[in-house]
Length: 254
Ligand code: NAP
Image (cartoon, rainbow, N blue to C red):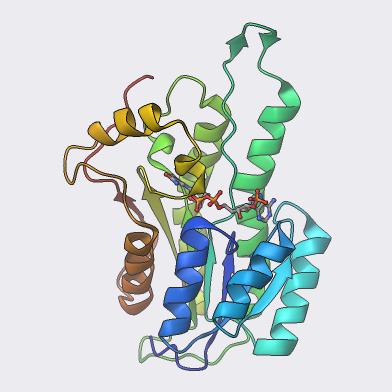
């Protein structure tokens, strides 16, 4: 897809894979809206790429509606939407202090799953008004971020794995429904990627995690996620599916 002057949106764009993706899309000529809970972080990324930074809570109906109104006014209706916003707090089902806090489980589902769906539904509604840009009638593409934890959740990841499993399950029905508008829906399931989410862990934990990746035996770079996003944007046969980006890792129970 030709991204020159196209409006695009990246959630979680203040950090990690979202920030790298915002920069990668801008390098292709897109006009990028960077959305993040941390409005300052969103603005920092946006400033580097002459984009639009907005503070948004993806789990909140009004917050996402307002952000999309603002970005459509400033940049136009987005052709590409990449959802990277997410949180990954760990907690056991049966912990030392008692059962998994229910409000923590609900918060993780709310941000990672409800937030992804919230962005998808608002973005898709707007995209239906776009003119098709390919002979097949493609209007746009929505790319979600799950995790390999959707398939091999570790001990302590009951909430996180459930939320990402929901994102995986959302992909096909959304793609099927939006097909008549020429809107594709894809999901990337990363393994271990070197972002603040991982790099804030102690060095010995990081070293032990990296050795679990068969090849290449290291963390993925956020830019390798960006490369896959750009390939999905360009390849319109990719639709309704989940791609693992993981160096063949299959997470152990802990
Ligand atoms: P990151 O650097 O922590 O970036 C995530 C961003 O999302 C942060 O800027 C965060 O803001 C923002 N965010 C959190 N809650 C939000 C909300 N309610 N509304 C809007 N923005 C919100 O993490 P990352 O590693 O790039 O993660 C990107 C995505 O990849 C996440 O969905 C994550 O679950 C997934 N993932 C990561 C890995 C990995 O190894 N890094 C592996 C598999 C999947 P705050 O900093 O203010 O919270």
